[in-house]
Length: 284
Image (cartoon, rainbow, N blue to C red; front, side, top):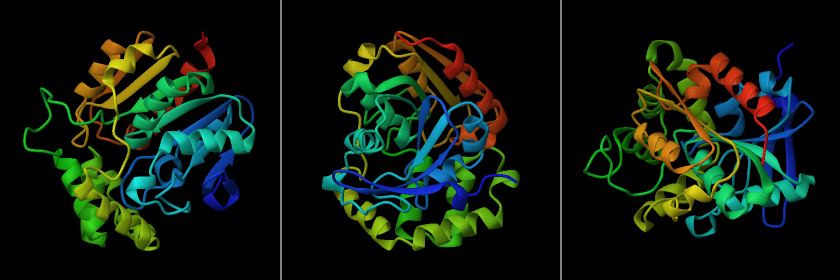
């Protein structure tokens, strides 16, 4: 029988947080970090990846503070890097591979520069890099996808959630199903404090950690795999080109016919890429 969220759900209390996470497998620890959308959780982002990766590794998909089943957090308390380190400490994990989508990818990048002793491998999928001018990014503020995401936070009803899921994917007919849109809407509405904290954080700049210093990227010494969708309308793929140029031991896989959710739209290929990378790439 396939693993379910109920099979794998756990709770841990760290120094500052009570965190929900999903655990499976044995072996080298791999921490999966979700993106920032309303209704996002470790399970919703990685339900198609946890079991295949758990055949080779000890997998932990975490709901970060302010999302899913974890503690609520106002914008002034959001430090997902510190929360990730607290998570490792609470479970007695010395170091782990980190796999992060979007906001989770940004957290993993920061962790690799701020706590290099706690990470063995780095995998990112479409991480934002802060407010910098770009060749492909819009010049009038957030990307098309981020504007839809923010509107879904303000009103996470099924119609706005459908617009959000559609802009995250290239293959809308396959992935933006009524069941998925309804489930994401229900998950978001189940934690109104998460929605409120995100929206109230918008006037302060952004309700999630923003990369502080791109000049630190060359200091990342762990093997790095960058995966990005060619058709990503949330975070343009030029971000991963920038990372490829800056991180010494990095490689990039750019997927055509793929939006912001590479691990969902191309799950089998993604699982194979990550498994091979983590298994066969030595650490310093």
